[in-house]
Length: 320
Image (cartoon, rainbow, N blue to C red):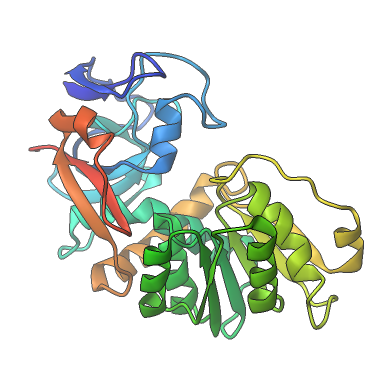
């Protein structure tokens, strides 16, 4: 079969022949229709993701839309120990797949499921989120952050603060459900102070930045909270600004801060998959919006560096 193949962590994948994977243990070989080029895919392809084992060559791609041998279309998440989904064919574990509605656009599903899943699962499975609560999305101008703003509102958030650096993308978020926007551009401490004033009393933080913005934001919020004993669930999902923070010990004693992660390992695969049908229904109905840029799998090298519009995602497609 043909696939996107990574032979060096320093180079983009190339469109090459690759051995067709052989099903075993209940797996099914499916024709891949579409696979999203997510940040998680990029980090896996350059060897920097925390799950990377350094082995090459590899086929990138963590999820996709495929056609089963009987013609049905499904969204599926690939197992960790099989070739990825950026190929003409891929292995599917039926337990990690969900059927698509007839009217579902496979390109939109491939583009949106991964970024949407991060906040959807975080709010539905990692905490007991209740309608009427308020949410801060830290890193809201990325694709996942943009989806998180929509999802928080869809799940009943009364107040959503969207924070990010890109002013053009920030301006778009009020139309997607943000009730307040905060710029993280400029002096970092001044940005943290703005964030503290706008979001001190939120109930949940969905954090895609980590690093310096989070390091400054945590004390900025906690020292301004009206009621410090009110629980603040800080859900760490991404680390766009850096992998580490220094956290002063006093913030853990002086407020009811609960820091947790949401991602591979913090939830069971079965628990995540159980949430996918409801999310697919939201995407199929148009409740959540996502922009996709479809490109042929054969153009994977060009796709790797192709810019997209705000909220957009490259999706590699096949002729299957």
